[in-house]
Image: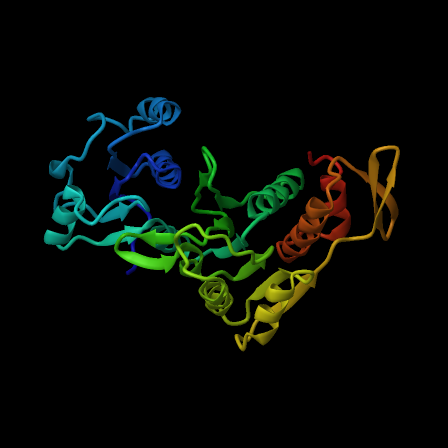
Length: 304
């Protein structure tokens, strides 16, 4: 399914979900015609929606918003099968996407950098974007935070926070498997029973499928200190480059942390060993995006 980016009419079923709102707002800023609905909106999100003209009919589902002139309908994670808007979209034969499917369609000609893992992906993505901004490298991004989606026509890269949640009620594929990254990072694989996966084996299997979804010739940067993750990545037969990372050497002195670098000790604002390991992963990603080691460390000295 190929969609033109310009002059689209898109309706979001489940606009109150932060990911869908972020995507809708980004499209709206680009000049697309965007509508959306949801049963309940968080008050802070509702204010943002009203300010941007994305909430015209209040709370509830409105079948009359679904019509044949729509180029796409995007369905949220929490939308149910009996949703009247979804049913009408299916009856009309409209093109229906989950959030990750639609985001991929919008970014398929960019270099997709997907940060995934059970924990740490948000902080790693924040580190990467901080370093890139510090070095005047403008990139697109899609994060699971308020105002977390930024899309342009001109940028070559997009940094995506890859969630392992299921995509939608009509697509049980885990979200991160639908981005087909060129560059990927896995921080760890730690099973928690959140209702999406029945056991640790099925959970780890989905991460293996994520590694297999990386485009041929792409790369995976991974935490070499996670035994299960290391085994998973090293056993993959996908023809990609593999870059392991570990917690870097550092020193502590009077509550301050100093990272050992080729140019000597560098003071850091972060102090947790986990964050230092996350930083090591972020460095590999930034280097693949054109930021050298010296530029990376200079930027990270200001990261809090």
